[in-house]
Image (cartoon, rainbow, N blue to C red; front, side):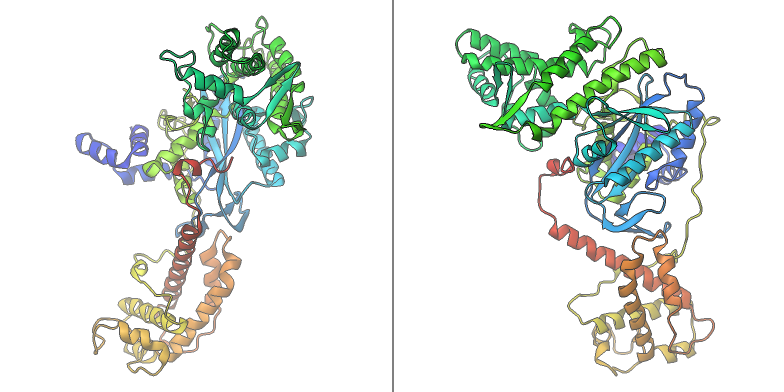
Length: 626
């Protein structure tokens, strides 16, 4: 019941409020406690792995073979200080305490999917700045493989798109079309690039360059000429084609559907028809042949049904012609030459190399599965990153369809979706997959392992505060601002500690310094009955020393997983230049000041991120990492 309720809450918080009035649904606090049972900080989630392990026990050997999908989702630059965890979220974080001071701009996410079973599961993520470096990426992937192996799952294939960091990682491993694998712990693991991304890359390059093979030339101008003639007919030969297909904008270029519909058998047959009737020149036959080849190629790497009119849409078997076709296609791609005008630019086109690596990998994977794991057939659609793209689409649905989530929004949504079996992929840029999430914690409470989070530091957990209501204008000089803050700290301390001695030492009724003008003008009454305290000079000097320490040390401890605890130790070592009674809440005052300073530092940094970010289409932002 909680899992179903959580899925409804994911779809829309407002809808959940409405349904709560009609049905008996758990409170939001109950759902938050439910998902808090497994922590999901950056890195590979140990809680998820322990839960998966209970399911793996009941799997057969074929179901345990899986692909490891890895990709990035673009994030909005934004910082957030978590009081319970005592750390700043939004900085580069790879898990295991490996953090940096860089601002996170994307989330590298890892998801596993069974090659034969009907399950998939995200297992971890890392917050990164820009593209993840080759060494870090290699370490994350190998760590994931080791941890999955420890619970009984075997990674057969690693899948990624053609991003520059993944391409560099493949080069680092020495991946070539002839050797599309790497060795880890004396075991061969294959590497593939996502076929849907590759087909988009082919379409995008055809829009810029001409492809020559045998005695043919494929050109985008032939497709434009065909479309311009076909769209004028009342009944078209290719009715699915629109202006978005032929003249796509930046976002439309990322849609797999638009690429496959233009590189389709229908378009190839229509161009052949137009050429035969003399409507298009004979040279357009080269474009038709090119489109036909890549349509057949995508069918062969996207098989998902046992019954299809097209043989290549069926799974690979011993009797199918997939192996012969893939070998023939490899020779076709090797013979392609790409020209920018008269200049040969074949070496620049990474997607051709990506196709060669992936097609050879499929051939090796099929042989391995058939000989070593008794596979009778293989659905090639299992060898892509569609589940991860769909997962990103669901992440973006959280919080009112946020195309560009912040790191905090991403981490919260990631934790929620680990419990959801209703993975709605309607906003993804690829075909819907019907897999169910592996981790169904509510399905069988006897088998589920709920891992309670380790105790977190409560350094700055000082109860309810109203520091967020304070507003210090940046146009006022530093001393006046700090004096006003010092008066606020005294007011909060005197709320819990009534002492005439402390008030006499730490407060002042006279305007004895120009640094206290703000306190004077901010006070509503002459007799100080409004509660605002004017600090004495000795207390103000002490707070100024704390401020200097914070400014110097905050950037040093920003990446710390106990940032508040580390800074509090420095504050406690600062000499006190005034006398106070033993009951004065010094530690409370230091924590309040520190929490307030962290809050405002992050708040003003987020304002700068918002003011300096370039305005882009909301739809385009979410694919800027590609």
